[in-house]
Length: 108
Image (cartoon, rainbow, N blue to C red; front, side, top):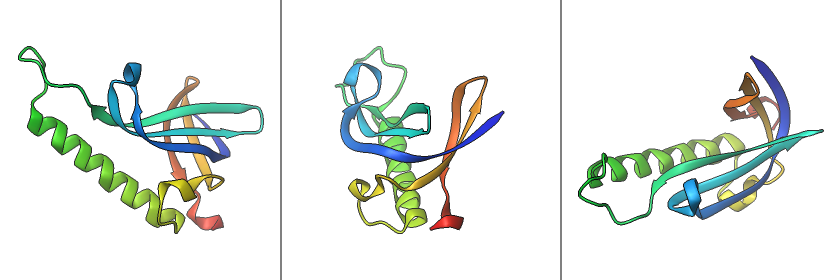
């Protein structure tokens, strides 16, 4: 496990994720000589009969995403995702793969 300090470099609410076929919030996170992406969302496509997820699953997931955005905004003392740019973060990687990240509330 490796922890790095950086900032939210950009944030966008809209289409993103897998082949831009999802709706949610996209983050670019980075620091000195490193960067990564994160996406919180779910499918924006019309559900087919063969899909393994239900409309209720999607609504639940998107509700969880909004609550996660709510917590992130509160932690950063911001009122809009647009205002999250340049907010300091701590990012945790496991085997060079993004595991999690958090707002560094202790430095705000």
